[in-house]
Image (cartoon, rainbow, N blue to C red; front, side, top):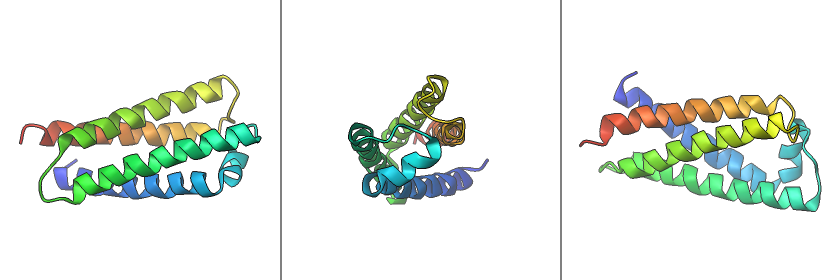
Length: 126
């Protein structure tokens, strides 16, 4: 995959991360329902908190990719966040906190993390 294609894919991932994170903040109950997760005040609170961090990380990634100067450290930390999120969601399914449908989220985060690492490897030496 070319550097420009990776960059475009990561911009789309950043937009999606901001959007889904904002949805978790604004409507955690609606986002929890398809995952068959427990729905109580504590769960909604922490799900919203995770959403807030998704907005921050996705926004930082977008900002880093849209600037004329490259900031590979932001891309690296985004990759680490995405890989960590993939692991956490997978564990949540394994522990029966989330339905198996949440594995699609884990797979998307895993792919996002791998793409971010690939882009980081390409731009870090510049």
